[in-house]
Length: 246
View (cartoon, rainbow, N blue to C red):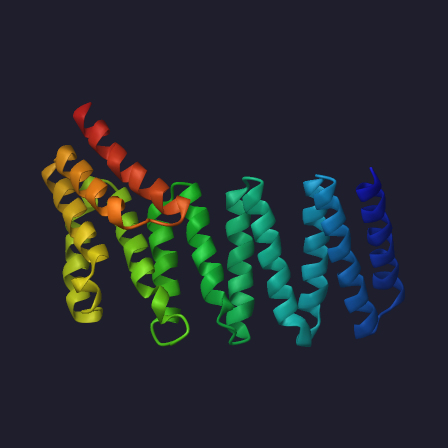
């Protein structure tokens, strides 16, 4: 109750600043109040109002030429909140918008936002779109030393997405795996590349036992990490059960 009342007070202050102050300082104060209101609404578990305030704040920041980074960060926060409430479609749009703004400002945080876009697509079982988002992120990583360490994990995730596209795309994945010898030769010597090859071979042969054996051996020594990656693999594994019913 107190959180909701505080949120309403912040929101009222934001509206006053927005309507009465036309200079940049007043508009930025309005945006800040909207952000404070969103935090209070989140604490009160009134998520629609929380998201509305974040949208207002993002719009104000975007209208100020020197506040694009703050606009991007606000869209990113909105995406995270949307994702947490299960609205993965809208979360994807927010992360995409944040990525565009970050990229416009030459801020490499756009790469991580695109990674979030891929997670949203996975939640919606749009695995090809998830793969395309991951490939966009990969392009931003490969030439930056600070991000290059993430490349193997992204390549593994792309491979998982190929697997999740069902056995009909196993040949396409096989071509992708071969292409990595020229593009990322060091990756082809990794355990990640080996497990992708093993799982793809099992997929092409429709050998569920081989899949289970190879996956168990891999995960015994190597943590997969993010839960969304496991979800992709589980979807790919389920294809064997579907094939057995046809």
